[in-house]
Every structure is written in structure tokens, then in C-alpha cells.
Image: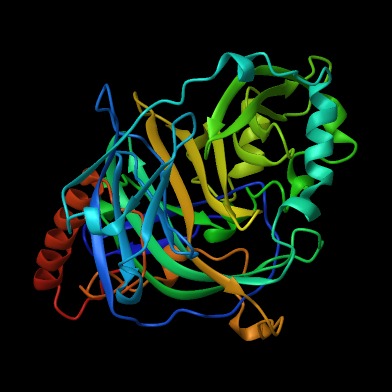
Length: 437
């Protein structure tokens, strides 16, 4: 089936290619966001020696649930309530010594936070390592009720999805969502409510294909493998993997075992491969970075491509995931996740393929205990098959985010937005009375 859309920018018919991730389920949520007076700090997180940017470093306001994360260029922006500007900022990054510094030491912008790699002490390097890596993973998953938040919470999160044609940004959608997070000891599914959303899309760069990501924030939410282990490690499927130790590192000044995993050679179904970062003392999963085996091109296409043009073959060439957890008061919780999907479109009677990438990421920026354990009405719940770009309303409001923390946009995204905005304004002037998507 081909969905046809009219594109007023180039007056052509666009065939819609809808993609979905493996994880498609339904649920709901509520809203806790409040407008408050705040002060904003921005800058970069860099390696102390090489000055290279540290990607996905976590910045947290000490004694609070307010946090953000650095982007792929190491840049960050953190909005802090005026009542908390006397607090400390905690900066952490996998394999580096955690920094605690007073906010008073920061300028409003152009801050450079330099982090040093954590040097392992000899006593730590020689620490007894469990003999059975698989048993360690099983124990870690079983202890989720003890080590992760055990009360219902309402989380505020920033979500972004981008589409690129080769290296050029062609579409950007962003949202603030509220997540009603069930306790990790519960099998109850989390719920999500869309609070604010905006988009910008340059359809002229998408050839004859309008790409849309189905599932929106749910694609990133289900990467929380501690809450949703059945999407990757069920009691049965965990035995389909080989597990082995791959050294150790540090996070938040804690010793971390690195466990490598991949599917056994006799298993034919596409499974995952990657690394798990597990706290050596308390058996807590702190991070996971992994990818899906998509060597079977036809099967991978059936898994991810919902609709496509009749005159093209479409298949993913990379499917990668990342999830990071944060700690407060001895309890851990989902903090950030990222999903990358790259794919090719092979057109009939065309010499060259089209190469696209779709990236979605979500970061928890604040949360509070859901004391009354309230839930969402059905009409307020975001559907798991949402297409965020269809729900968003555009980049017209300069004060859109207010006091909300976001992931600082990459320079390439910022320039793409400005270019797309100019193009849309020109198109609107040339096509009066015609709506712009």
C-alpha cells in the first residue's frame, strides 16, 4: 500500500515510507511540568588531555532530579531553577573520574568542563572477577527490584528524532513528554503523554520519499532493558548468547565489569550483540551499547519497513541501541537512550542507491515520585504507533521550551533548521493559501 501526500514545495507526489522499530506496544502517562524562573548554563565537556568532546556525558544538579546530557559534539545546555543556583553540578562519563563543582564557578555560556580518565588502581585491576559472565547478567536482571527505583514516578523527558540523507539533515522533530514510570519490580507498562512538540522538514531533499518514524518516544523508552528485559533477554533467549568478560572501567567512581555478548553460531534468528556495563559491587546495569544482527537483508526489511514504494527495495544496514542509567539516593533509574537506524533505498532504473539514517534519542530531565500512583485517562495516552512529525506543529515559537532542559542541538542541525525555515517562508510566499506541512 502506498500513501500519497501532496508536497507544495515542489508540487510532486511523495510516497510515504513508514518505519517502525521492533518494539511496538501500547500504554499512557500524565504531566508534571511547571514554569519556573531559571538560569541557563551552556558549554562543552571535553577530555582533559586531547580536548576531544565527550559524547553523552551526564550533567546532574546535586540533590535534585534535574539533569541533561551532552550532544555528539560534547556541547550541553542546563537550565537550573533560580532557587538551586547555589547547588553543585555533578558531571559523569563512562571511564572518567566524576566531577563535582559549584554552579557558581560556571559562566552563563562558553564553559569548558575538562574530565580526566579514571586510572585503575592495581588492587582494583586484580579484583576477583566472577567466573561465569552469563550468571552475572542473570543475577543483575533479577536484582532490578532491589537496585532500581521501586516506587511509581512521573518523569519529564526530552525527545528528538532526526532524519538525514547521507550527511545532510532533512527532518527534525522534538518533544517534551511525561512518562508515568512504573516501579522496576512491577510488570506494569510505562505510560507516555505528549506535552509539547515541534518539527521542521525539508521535503525537497527527500527525493520522492517522505520518511516517517513510527512509534516516536516509545522507540527509545523500550531500550530500557532493565524495565523491559523480555525485548532482549528472556529466561529462554538469554541462553542463546555467548557472554564473556571484556575488562573493566569506571562510572561515577565505581568499578564496572564490561560484559561482552553475541549470539551463538547455531542460532539462526537475528539477535543482538554488544556490551553491558555492570557495577562490580552491587550487580547493577549502568549502561548497555548493542546492535541487532541484520545480515539477513530480507528478514531485516520485514522487521522494520512498514510501507515502501513499489519501485524500490528498502532494507536497514545498521540498527544500534544505547541506554544509560543514573543513580540517586542508592537507587538507579532510566536516564538516556538512543536508537540509530540506517538503511538503503534501491530504486528501479536508478544507478545509485539513496542512503538514509534515522536517529531518535530521549533523556530524562526531571522526575518526582508519583505519590498518589495516578494514571492517565485513555484519551490522554500517547499511542505506540504515533508518528511524531505528524503531531508536531512547527518551529514558529522562539520560547517553545521555556524552562525545560533539552539536549543541545548539533551545529549541523541548527544550520539545517535555519535553512529549512527560510525555504518554508519562501514557499509560503510563493504559494499563498497553500498549507505547509
